[in-house]
Image (cartoon, rainbow over all chains, first blue to last red; front, side, top):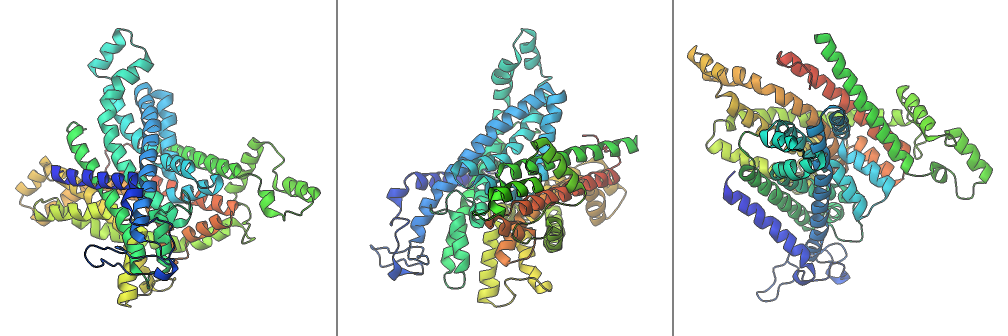
Amino acid sequence: MRPWLGAIGGVLLAMTALLAVAAPLAAPYRPTQINLRARLQPPDWGAPGRPRHLLGTDNVGRDVLSRIIWGARISVSVGAAAAGLGAVIGTTLGLCAGFFGGRTDAVVSWLIEVQLAFPFTLFAIFLLAALGGGFVPVVCVLALATWVNFARVVRSQAMSLRAQDFILAAQAVGVGPVRLLRRHLLPAVLPSVIVVASFSAAQAVLTEAALSFLGVGVDPTIPSWGAMLNLGRDYLSDAWWMATFPGLAIALTVLGANLLGGWLGARLEPRGS
Amino acid sequence: MRGRTILLRCVQALAVLLGVSVASFAVAHATGDPVTLLLSPSASDAARTAMRAHLGLDRPVTIQYALFLQHALGGDFGQSFIYRQGVAGLVLARLPATLILAGSAFAIALCVGMPLGVLAARGGMAAAMLELFSLAGLAVPAFWLGLMLVLLVAVELRALPVDGYGGLSHLVLPALTLSLQGTARLSRLVASGMRGALRADYIRTARARGLSEARVVWVHALRNVLVPVVTMAALELGDLISSAVVVEMVFAWPGIGRLAVAALQQRDFPLLQGTVFIAGLGFVIVNLLADLLCARIDPRIGLAR
């Protein structure tokens, strides 16, 4: 993985995050501002000095660019939260499974296999139909998809670390299992966790967009990229920009996280692991 | 020994299926009282109690789960609220469409991804191109790609039908859309596997014996990459069915994904539960078959993981 690719990834992600945080300042219009006289306006770069709707307007005249900028908030927060929650759950379970082995490992491995056995989008629809939408349910459901990534990687690393000298030495001087896991094993697997977190955030952003597209996202009244795509589908032949740009935003964000993850993987992980 | 490991793998698969059934049951149970959805708000309390008793909802949770499992084993997943039909029949009627779509996408991914990976393993320009393609392929959401293809091929060029179910021409766009991510992942896997395989001693031996380069690459090296490919291909099928849900929505493809979304919109929980459970069942079976197939391809694998 070339470093400059990682840098591009970092820049893409930083830009998305910055836009999400500074959405009120960055967006030229309010995302919910309806203007029925400017419905379905094509992208217009306007005269120099006075830009109008750079990426066009939607079916009720809302500015597509502003909605994309505000939509970044959903994608960034959901992606980060789902990767974080998945990291906590998956790393804990993976460490325990790899370190203790035996019955603990059997249970965690079983959980991983059960999780992987569900076609995830179907299961997520089912769960969200039961739980109702909203930020917390969506993040929890996505964490259900991401924890497996962490658990698998951490489990196999903990298994090989278990027999290493520094762990055996710590055990020999009487370090208890909780402290051993937290102070000795966790730092050793952390680089991999960071790498997996990057890819998991990408996966969460994609899945969140798919769920919003299907109408079970965070909140249909808040602009999100998936919901914009869903709306854009109905106007595909009249207003290509409505579906094109939100998808581009998703793709660039996911690309950024994947590039960063690939570069981090090459940098942080020891060769051959 | 062989028989025992196969048996062990089957027991593992059964354990996973048990987990799938518990999860499906638990989620459906968490949705609350189906009687409020089934009966009109003006229904009398007696009617509600009767309905509850009829559905077995007045019994303890463990008994309800046992009944669910017993019925599921007999192929009975209850009645759909919206269609007033057996869930199993509904899902099975839609399953072929999804399988055709996922199967075609899978075939495209195999036919395109494997050769791409083999070519890219040689390094140079081909490797850089593949890297670019797979990075893009993994980042683009399938449903957006579908919409863009519709825009380009169907709206602008008017070359292919955009939606519906019928002949081959209806299948092209959805299958292409669905195959992209699989192609990207598969080609990466094959490329990295081939790079390792081409350095192995048996490849040097094969070359030393004077075999043609094509035979060395496509027969000797590729065979040793097949095991991770089959394992991943089976997992990929789960992803394909998962993405198919969204792609079906884009192309109005009448598979289980659209069935699930219709069920979602109408809060038809038995139908959702049946769809999820049957899809999980299929996935476990395919993975079991893949493991057995791997043991056939590579006799060194003892199936015990």
